[in-house]
Image: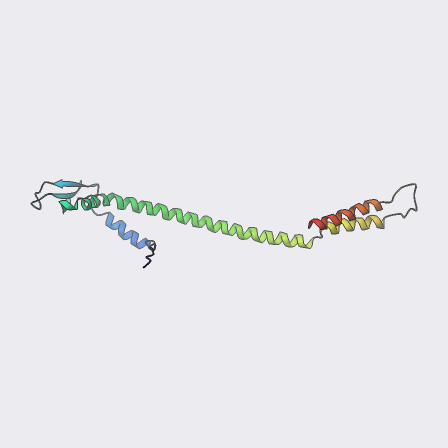
Length: 171
């Protein structure tokens, strides 16, 4: 069994589109496909006509779909060229937006890396709590002034407990 893969043709180049646009400017439209009464081929036929130039083509009666296609092509090609121009402009706009968004992502990633490095340089919450507990212990009067109750060792113990709990949470 042979597998046939459909491929998307490459987009038309600007030069190809210019050539098509020049051809589309041939005989002004609108064009119509009208039944000929047999004057031309001695049998029924179809005439493709232009308001500006009259008959521009004749085809046999059994080619009616072709005659209708030819008549519609004048306006269809122009409409397709205009739509192609609109879509190309939209693609260009989206590509500009993509470029801007990629730059924003790169900038955000750089800012995130900088912030992470800054946070890594800072002491952990547990280290800050232990340092505060050590300061409280170092300021303890060791009961030398019981009337003033200046001892904060119990607060230092609470700070150490919080430090241990913080490390347990992974913070």
